[in-house]
Length: 420
Image 1: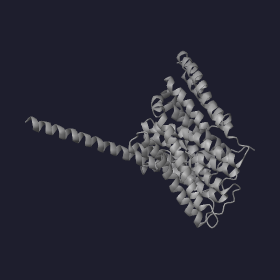
Image 2 (image 1 turned 30 degrees about the vertical axis):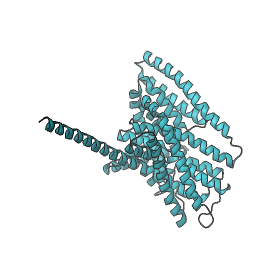
Image 3 (image 1 turned 180 degrees about the horizontal axis):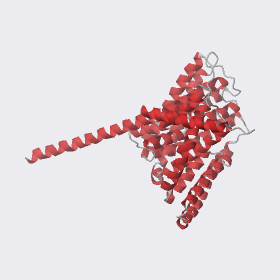
Image 4 (image 1 turned 90 degrees about the horizontal axis):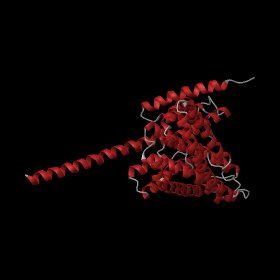
């Protein structure tokens, strides 16, 4: 007999995410925090009312694809080009610093007398892999928060998006290198070749689609609903091809699809359509599903201490690493803080990396719990920190403006006194 329980699951998720979203806005926090907390409370980590199912997982995956597609539609390509070099430097710093930080704490704890690891690989590879997990960035949380704050199209917002896409590629490379050391069947050259081939594919197909789509839109302007369908088909196709054929995250393909269509002049119309679907169903399920997938294991005092240090290191290494990269590229201090905080969330990306590491014997079972807790905390705290740093940046800008105004007023007074 066919089960209709998924209808009840969706009802509970939509109702709880909305109620908690309203509650979090009342205490001046982004709504996405409420959605994440709703999933955590409903899931096995707290009350166990709901559990992750294949249906919810698929809807959640579609949700993050649409979310990143919308981010691509809203991106200013000219601004993104300006921040291209900066995004690369930010992403590199945002990978190198977390790897170093993760390795150091793993080096201290992953030894006899502290935490006994049952992983099959060498201690050195295990310690490096902890650092690789910390390189992950779940930009979807940041994108939703920046949209809610109205800051997605800012200079720092574009830098975060560009750095996150590059960070995803560098994360794939780092994961491939470490897994190839543990499993000889994994070939680095093949993976790097696929990544390069994906960007060649994206440029060629993107150019052709852009020309055909823009020409077709000018001929069929009265049938706008077909524009939406064509855009969505292209988004799903790019997401599928990037993940299935090239091993690049599907959200990267979706973002590039949105980026291509954003230059056709119909992005505002398309955003209006996709935002409704995303707000109505897809986004709440995606954010709630992150909480539903969390299961907290039992932990000893030593593991709890390791968890606390891991969370602090996870936050600081992204803020310092990406912030340092932004500073090297000439960004102002408040922008550096925004960029660093925007890269903190690990989300489902870190969980995927951890699961792959476990399969290759790179992550001991005792370290799975701390990684899960780190993912939960960084995912929830990122929207909160983003609101804080954007608000403090605005205050700093006002103060600077007042200082400049006061300086000019003082010069005017001196000039008047001199003339008199």
